[in-house]
Image (cartoon, rainbow, N blue to C red; front, side, top):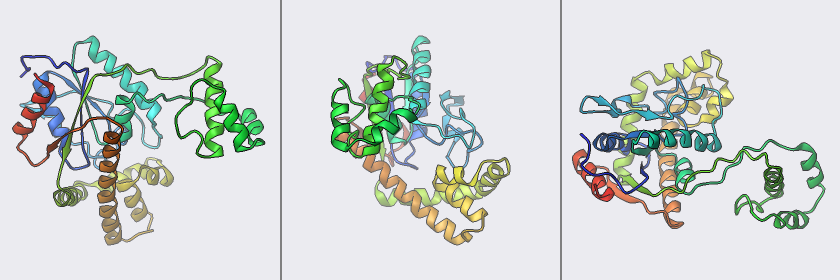
Length: 310
């Protein structure tokens, strides 16, 4: 089951829009490499949110063996997990896999999560400083920009877009200067990204078919259970897509047909935004090797293995 060679890369990333079949491909490749999967899905981190987030556990079974997958079911529903926490948790898993000499395969469609790893976002867990904010609020944008320019390193290039952002950037730099920074320092990774792409009409058909199957599998009951267990309407709406629209339906704010139709449209738009994010990554110099999602699985696996040169 293991490949004869070992990849020259630190990590393989397999991504693509929703319903592209990336998870099954990642599991098949991980099986060949004797690797394990690290999830890059911003909603599959939540327990009890299975059908709506598409935790297709059968996809992780390759030739009768379940491929281990990390960073799924690590947060309670109702919690708002973020990119800083994802980087921190990713690093723990990555270091553990490296220690055990296991090759990591990062798989998911959350572009920001993937980008944060391969680009090494500098994320900060910085608490608000009400006194500092109050002082800075009295200053003009020009004065705030001058203050920010006195720091050697800026948080990011969007820091000066609005007054709120420039104040937050100063707050972060002040906290960092105090030596209390909760920054996650990611290693510079030698990565290979394989993207699974489908023609627009095929993607739309797959999304619609999968949505119907999820309703048949009890997705409405899953959301009802979350509400009954105390997850607030606001939090479920914040999770978006299936959880948002089914909550609105269960709360009597939308009839079934309207809910289904609007959810279907929202998922199609979501897939389009995913592709826009990936194109943005390519524009800033991150290479993505695109693979036709309609090819047979063994052919897709062969292509990825060829890219890895193993």
